[in-house]
Image 1 (cartoon, rainbow, N blue to C red):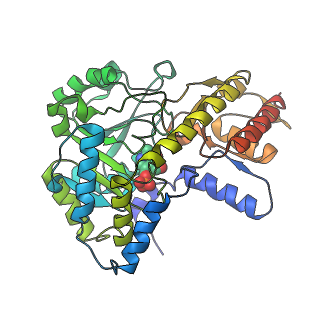
Image 2 (image 1 turned 135 degrees about the vertical axis):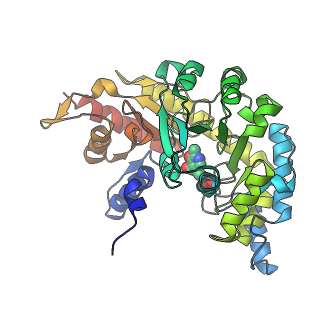
Amino acid sequence: MKLSERMSQIQPSPTLAINTKAKTLRAAGVDVISFGVGEPDFDTPEHICLAAVDAIKDGFTRYTPVGGIDELKDAIIIDFQRNYGLSYGREEIVVSCGGKHSLYNLAQVLFDPGDEILIPAPYWVSYPDIVRLADAVPVIVPTYEEDHFKLRPEVLEEAIAAKSKGLILNSPSNPTGSTYTREELEKLAPIVLQHGLTVISDDIYYRILFRGQPWVNLSMVGDDLRKQTIIVNGVSKTYAMTGWRIGYLAGPAEVVAAVTKIQSQSTSNPNSIAQKAAVAALTGPQHCVDEMVAAFEKRCDHMTSRLESLPGVRVIRPTGTFYIFANFSSYYGRAYDNQVIGGSLDLSAYLMDKVHLAVVPGVAFGEDSCLRFSFAISMEQIDQGMDRLGEALTALR
Ligand SMILES: Cc1ncc(COP(=O)(O)O)c(C=O)c1O
């Protein structure tokens, strides 16, 4: 059957592909260590699961309002007040089937064919294709390792053209683990305002911050910025709820109404039971988040030192998320069995074949010099994986 033209424009998610390969090898009995995981390795906290059980027992199993139940919107509003110091009304919040769905809906309601959307690289793999699916044009904007891959104001200014409509900012960042400071955002702010860019602030890792780094995003820098920014967030990463599929956005009421309209003709409401679980997540005890973040921070520090001890590897110590983006380009041009490692794709394939390590090649995020390692795995696995990595690198000539 002939598929639509649109389908030739997009790629399947490379991070999901790596994980599928790791799972297939594991099923065949191979001892794979996967640094490819994009989700916390912790279970969803019990009080959240019990809220879902209660929802089922109470028969909360029917359609809900398309944009989410008021109880969940109120819990999200409280969270924005608590963590951002920002006040929103129910008409400025819409709940979707995951943060990815919120981003997809936003692109559909905001972008027209030919609109250019600025995406700093390294970027989360789905941004360019979500933009393409709205017939808009992703414009990749470079960042530099020496700036911890954060956008320089003059580079943003230079990238802006007549058709520039939006900017997608992700902090803390997947894949780099870097986080913008208030001072850095304050330097980007006048450019965003002057050119009237609509900002999508993807804050999905906002609670996974290390070493006391304070939380800040562009909306928090000034009221005028807030009017131009739409915040995307969700419970997936913060509460180890990736499978529950609850994400949300906060922004101008007309954008929220448009997203709700799209959902009314596509998915209808997000899962009713998962919405009740998300209420429990946002309004219940928060020490589960603190414990998870403390564990991530410990692993982050340990893994950073292990990577730093490898000759020729450069690491930026993450300030958040559960990813490390490390530069391996000094190994490009070396070979094994007469096969030359040309870039991050070759190196990740080599690591999988030679020592059964799954890592995501940086090229998937628009930065070929690096590999992305997730530390959402145990310390034991991290150590075993780092041993194997050292062994595989030593074998390159
Ligand atoms: C940067 C970023 N944004 C958004 C998402 C989407 O998360 P979810 O759809 O599970 O809420 C992810 C998930 O990997 C992500 O890494």
